[in-house]
Image (cartoon, rainbow over all chains, first blue to last red; front, side, top):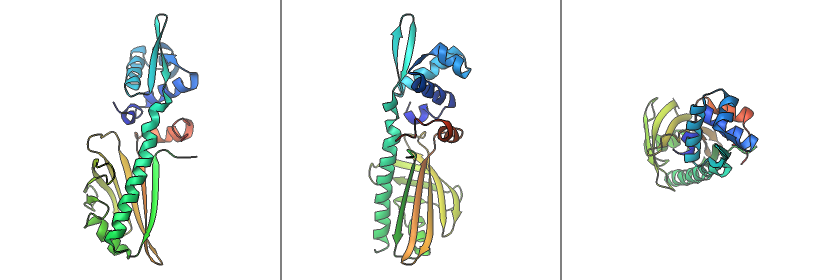
Amino acid sequence: MTVFAAIADDNRRAIFDLLVRDGGGTATSLASSIGITRQAAAKHLAILADAGLASSERVGRETRFLAVPAGLDPLRTWVDATAAAWDHRLDTLTDKLGR
Amino acid sequence: MADTRTVTRERTIAADPDDVWEAITADDGLGAAIDPVPGGRVDGDDPVTGVRRVGAVEHVEVPRDLRYRWWPVDDPDQVSTVDISLTPADEGTTITVTEHLVLAPTFAPRMSAQRPVLLAA
């Protein structure tokens, strides 16, 4: 799943923000923080990890998840790519209209 | 604060608004075929990356305002809105384009109000 789809879900956004704010978390701790089941939290964490927004590490019997802020880079490159495209399109339109 | 989801461009072109409108809607002047009626199809390749985008027109006010929603044909999650406005200027027409990345209907207000992470460019 792309980062765009991964963060389009409110619960995943909330989980990602908690990981950033708290420096990490487990499916159990995140589930209780936002009021969803542990299974649902685990599913969201797997999607965040798949999209490059979270990493996991084993701590004893638990899996601890960490935010990967660089996973948001596609959002930033979206701005640069979109600006470049519009500069190009407006150049083309200006040429077409003769100036 | 920098906004990582909105791009705005402004250009003044030496032509009157009717001609600019005509160029955009009838002549694929912005590199996309645009059917300028509500619900009309938008279809064009990104001039830099070549990625094809498709979408639908949402608002039309001839020859002043055109708004549509589109997305890369191979990544429908990456929806954005485009607002193109034409304003008469001394030397012709000023065209202002604003493209805004839409993440989800409920997402934007929460992000700007409480979630600084995404907005720190």
